[in-house]
Every structure is written in structure tokens, then in C-alpha cells.
Length: 352
Ligand code: 6MZ
Image (cartoon, rainbow, N blue to C red; front, side, top):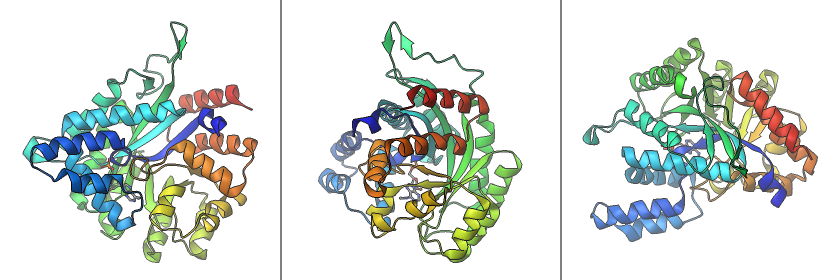
């Protein structure tokens, strides 16, 4: 479906370390293998595998973090991930990542994030705008007569559910300090079987009090109490919503909280047993705000175009419906009004 590739798309749920090219991961693994830090062939099998349970996904992230967590590599993967999204016509990307501290290599949460920003600055294949629209050089996608892809990038700092309250608060404070370089919000993610909602609440409240946007991984496993507590917090968006009960749907729909839908991720991790019973259909028919997203395009071997194609095939969307679905994602972004207007223009020009 070539038209899906050329459709301008908006990605709002993508984890940096889950969106690494396999070729890059294998290259990094080979280097650590040569240094004797890991056994390359073991890692090669894990990286190339396509079926993974949710528990295996989190084991894989521990491995990926071993391969990627030095400043130079963080810069490199940021550059590659943004380029890959731009090349498939993602015009606005909210990229999320967990700031990491690693004393043994002199990495602080701040220096980790500076390496991410360095990655954004180092992109030359495509035009990137990641500071506020009014401060940035105006993006013109015709350069010397050659059309270049352009992409707006905003950052969300993730709190990992393994973190303490203090560590989560540190991340929120860092996000506040980095608002001038494109950080717009906070995400709560990580293994949903780990950690308590009450641990993260003070940090999330601090974020809210200081006008950061908030998105929560919500209902990725059955946890009725936590789902209700999260909805009562009224985040600006949620991700997944796989294990919602009737009362959760009622509350979600009443509050009109947009849902980031990650079809392939939900199917591969078996959070949803089959695509034809995915909650996309019910939310879509109810005209509830939803956004198709990749989650981790590296880990789940997908792309945003692939997620749209899957929705078209599975739910019978027409071209017009698909275009409208892509365009209405603008409303759910955490972007400034000026960027939203620019995105509207991009869609108007691409209208079928
Ligand atoms: C929950 C997830 C996730 O932050 O190191 N992450 N958290 N559910 C998911 N669904 C499968 N996919 C990714 O990117 C990797 C981290 O993002 C979170 C996990 O905390 C993972 O360690 P960063 O760039």
C-alpha cells in the first residue's frame, strides 16, 4: 500500500531504545562480543527473534540497554530513529525515552538527555525541528530544488516503573529544565508487573502542577485498581488500554482521554489474543480519540506505515477514513498551537 507510505503520519508512542534498527543492534552486539562482555551468538538469536511475550520484551530491553547506554550510542540511535520515521513520512514525532544514570561511565540523567539532543542536532538526512516553532529556523522542505523530508520532534521523558519516588521526581525536574529543547511531557512506562501507582504519583503531580503533559501506560496487564486510579488522575493521553473492563471504558469515554493504540505490539505480546477483537474497533466506532502508534518498531519489527496498513486490512478503513484518522492525531499531540497549525497545513496539502 504505497499510498500509506506517502500519507503524512503522526507518531505519539515510540520508545527510543525499542526503535533501534536490527543492523545497529547487531553491530553494537558484535563489538561487545569481541570485547568479551557478551556472547554474540546468544544475543544475535534474541535480537532476530520475532515472537516475544511481554516478559521477554522486558528482558530484551535489559539487553538492549547494555548495548546502547553510552553517550555516543545514545546520540547515534536518536539520529537513526528520527531519520527512519522521517523517511516513512512521519511529519511529527513524540519520542520518549527513560533518562538513565550510570555512574561507572559518568552518565547522569542530564548527560543522557544531552546525548539525545546531540542526536537530534546531528541529523543531516532530513530537516528536523525540535525546539519551539517560533525559535527555530523556519523549515523549508525544498533545498536547492531538492525536496527533503521534514519532521517535527518533541520529547517525552519516561519514568520506569522500577524507579523510586525520588528518582521519578528527578526525571520530572529534568524535563522542566529541558522545556526549551523540545521536552513537552512525561510518560510512565516499564514492566507493568513492577511498581506501585502511589510511588509515581508525587512526580506526576509535580509534572502536572508545572504544565508538563502526561501520558501513562495504562491497562497493559489486568490491574483494575490501578486502571481506575490512573483514569481518575486524568492524564492527557494513555497508551494500550488492553485490559479494560466496562467501568474503565465508561470512564475513559466520558473523560475523552485519547488512546495510543499499538496493534502489532499488543498482538505479539499476546496482550490482545487476536486483531479482530482489538479495542481499536470499538473506540473507532465510538469516535473516541485514538492514535495509531508503533510502540517499539525495532523490537516488534514494524513501522508506522505497517500499523496503518494493518488497521486498513483488519478494520476495512477506506482511504478517506485513514486520512482522517491520521489527521485527527494532531489534536492529541502535545505540540504548541503553531506546530499544530503547520501540521494542519501539511494535511490540507496532502488531502486525497
Ligand atoms: C511498557 C515499555 C514498553 O526508555 O530506554 N517500554 N514499557 N510497555 C511496553 N510495551 C511493550 N516498550 C518499551 O526505551 C525502552 C524502555 O521503554 C519502556 C521500558 O521501560 C523500556 O525499558 P528507553 O528509550
